[in-house]
Image 1 (tube, helix red, strand yellow):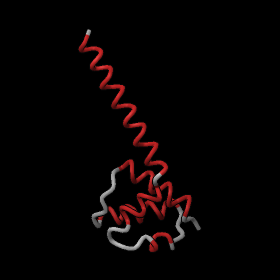
Image 2 (image 1 turned 90 degrees about the vertical axis):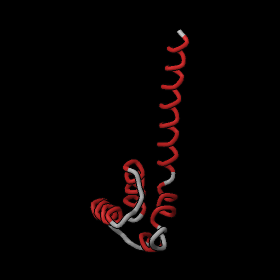
Image 3 (image 1 turned 180 degrees about the horizontal axis):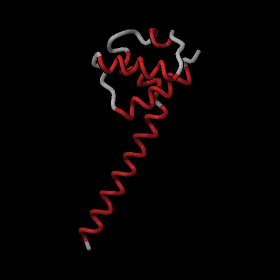
Length: 88
């Protein structure tokens, strides 16, 4: 019985932690832009661009190819932020 309770607690922790991280990331597209993109260039550079969602995806893919450290989840959040905030 104790193993079942422990397993249930661990599963609940994993799901709530993941949900909290995702919720925080959704709110922090701007923070990702500042933290990850400004490692190589000023954040003013992408902020000055006006691109379609496809163009932003291409740009982020190119930056990842140049070494930008960003997870797939962060990529989605960043692309959503860029596409909504810096559109043509």
